[in-house]
Image 1 (cartoon, one colour):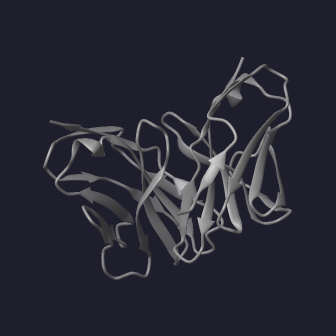
Image 2 (cartoon, each protein chain N blue to C red):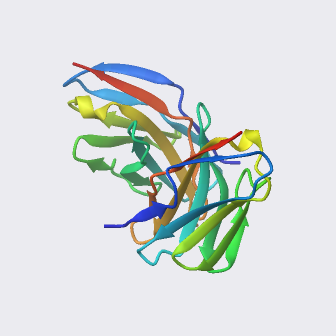
Length: 114
Length: 112
């Protein structure tokens, strides 16, 4: 069975500082994809970043980077230079190779303080 | 830009009513998904579809059914709504060349 664990229900970070949101996953598949989504209070789910299990380099998208440690089965999201607009729920997700199913963690609520 | 729309942002229904939630995408995606989101539980997959008239159960299909008669439209049906189906319902479609799901704005359903 696939499982995604986000152990931080809520986090605070000071504006302009970096923050790491934790995600661990459990799968027996050799090939899979890892995703992070942002959900502001308005409710829409916004795709942030993707990492394939065979990608050797960590994915980066602007201020977002994914710290992928395959042996530890972790896929932490790092947000650099936090902004007030980063305050939101963040979800880690995984899909097996066939991309027919996506599994989501329970989310981390990030609050950025001015 | 990919656009996924859902028929209602907010919906209030009574126990026992039949409820239809509609989802439409405009990018000719084959894979579409229905999730429900509850606090502390994240998103849980109800059903998904990988082509017209094709569907598969997700992790929590009980009490729900789906319909995919046209490629762009994926409907979630609650045959007899119950109070424990009060939740946020999110639809998504998958862009295969980027392996990315795009979500609709969600429907917050309250069953009284």
